[in-house]
Image 1 (spheres, rainbow, N blue to C red):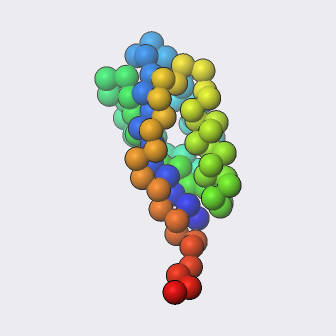
Image 2: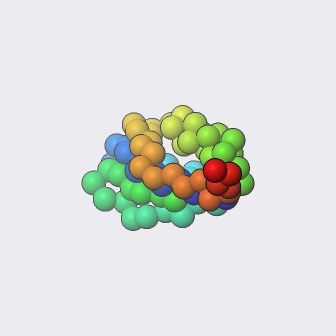
Length: 80
């Protein structure tokens, strides 16, 4: 299960609306909003799901930036 961490930046007047939209998404934990930004953790079924989540997050109305700051590929097996 891939785990991704993001910092989302937006205008202070849009933060509450953006957080409501994200809160409705499956597999998301939100951190507190501070100075027009907040952190979140997203849990996806696979890498394709993680990529789709990042794209949908970035395209939400009002989001200025969705910065991927952490990603863990927990399901990747070492075959070396």
